[in-house]
Amino acid sequence: MNDFKSLKIKQVLKTLLKKRGFTYEAVAEHLECSIPTVKRFLGPEELTLSRLLELCDLLNIDLSELHELTKETTQIEDSFTVEQEAFLAKNPAYLGYLIKLFSGETPKQIAVKYGLSIRSTDKYLLALEKHELIRVSGKQKVKPAFKNVPKFGDGPLGRLYFESVISSTARFFTEVAQAGLTLKRQGVDSKDRPHVTWGIDSTKVTRSSFDRYISDMERARIEFDRRADFEKKTKPIEELMTMVIVTGHTILANDSSHLEILENMLGEIKNI
Image (cartoon, rainbow, N blue to C red; front, side):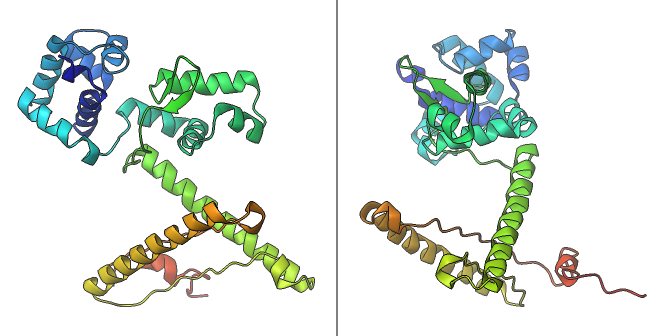
């Protein structure tokens, strides 16, 4: 049973439960136990063979299939449970805190950066631990419960994330562009004022040309990431600046209603 105690088994099981829409409540009902019990054996406690077989029955897979899936664990994307997604969507501040932990910042660093009290820090950590989004080691080191940031999907968390990213990005570039124009009018040298390029293009191409463009952009991004990583490791910190890049690409049918947004970008033309 040593193999079945591994984190990989639990990761695969939680991923499958998530994909098939099983909540902790549904699992508890099927296994005739409490929700806290489900959280324990899918979390820090040992997963017994009997519980494992019950979960396989719920997921309609056998042990051999589960064993094969564990070999592909590295290919299975981390994902939030339904409960975790609902919690983070309802409490975006906790999502922001969790993302900071993913980036490698410690609770102490986050507290200093955002002026958090000890009480506030404890509330963040207790809630995230309660929802099994972080792990606290014996040495009180805090780490996210996932190796990588799970994809946010197309549910409430995904909608919250993309709406927030898009609105914040628009505000960011608007403020930077305005600051640059204001300083230009004031005669400030170009090297001492924000520089921003911003534009939107709409053109008609074939799907194959669009796919090729995306592929070329991805190769360029990978190459640029290598250069940026080299500079971070070799250049003095005072020579480095923060470069912000936002990309977005889509291809739509010519009669898509979404294109009306671009048509009316500077003001709707209508009968007056």
